Length: 137
Image 1 (cartoon, rainbow, N blue to C red):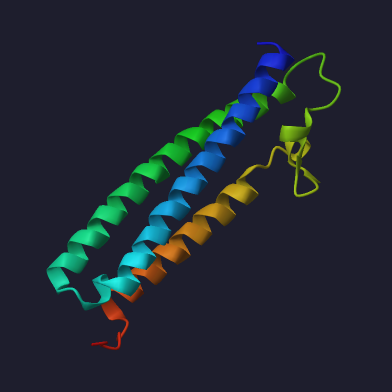
Image 2: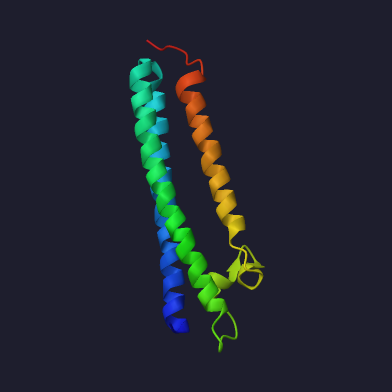
């Protein structure tokens, strides 16, 4: 593949990540709203079904992001291995000011994303099943 094609693929990968993150925040926001407005007073079975449904949606997004991560790693490797490449294109070269392409390290952002998602998931578990909600009439 040419550098132009690989650059296009890297931009597509970045767009796919942004779309998954947007969907993730939509699902989590809707679940938090449901917890606040009615799910906090729901019986255990309904809470369990709602949490299981959200868990399935998040698992699907997780599998999608793993596929995107592998594709991105392949594109970055292909860009790095191009013989005539002087510098990587800006979308893949700099990530928070670090030249991760030269270091071959994209896993810093990936691990931060997984850690954030896991922490939010545990927080939602606590709010769903363990938090002592005050009853409002």
